[in-house]
Image (cartoon, rainbow, N blue to C red; front, side, top):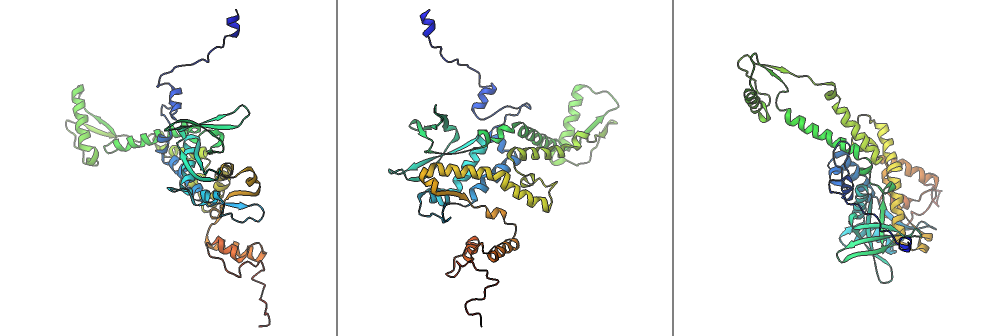
Length: 389
């Protein structure tokens, strides 16, 4: 009786074959209702998915990032974190490349990780990308996160300040949330490839006035395919023994095939929260709504990512006291710039309002400052000290 009271049951373990859906999830591939297994590799073969992943990752990677002082908004270029977020993550990886790779990892696997290499005094020195499959996030009893990282020397436990982490919404990759839509896109492309592979020969029915046995039918079909398939497509058909060829017309489903493919592109755009025009689906795109969708791309698609990146940088590269005095921010001005004329008009209005100095405008145009360019006076009304001349 006492042995039953104090006995601790072992946790239940289950064994399942590699063909089981649970086993496929361990390798990042999940079967769908259509039977197509969707994983990072198969998903990236779909042009719409590849375009969405590249668009988000490369845009985030190419945006300039700086470390600012909260009091006067000056750039803290001498801080060790400035080089890691603005210039280079390490000697062989630029800051742009690291952001692009980690964002791609997050889009395909749910999270991207980088190891923060520090000097003996705790100063952040380099950032090294980690394979998503080698990092296991865990949580302490009090809620503090930590990570189990598989290295060549074995598994190592690291604190949350040692691993720069960028996650997707809910920690689940978009290709897993939208695997059914991606699977349908794969099936549509396979159907299109098969259609064109068989489309080199006429699509129809060969009728004969007399009954043919099975072997005769195989010979007629083989002869027809070899004569009118591949590079011989379009050749004149010559039929013997009273045979006739009847062309088959497209069904309603075939006629709507192109529209179904476009709808899958729109569905994938919804999964990644990207405007369809950004994936070059322009059936409903105009000059006006394309510009508006570009602004939506910044507000709806990129803004959550930029917030996630800013906090990930600050959490690992700044101390709690430094986070009170400094902040990391992405410069998104280039995304809002439509053309040179609109940009010049905006800068002119800011100068006349006294909001920007000439040097601030020159900085936005990537020009060197001038000694007399820090005055906020309106240049359109000021005539200088010697107004008599």
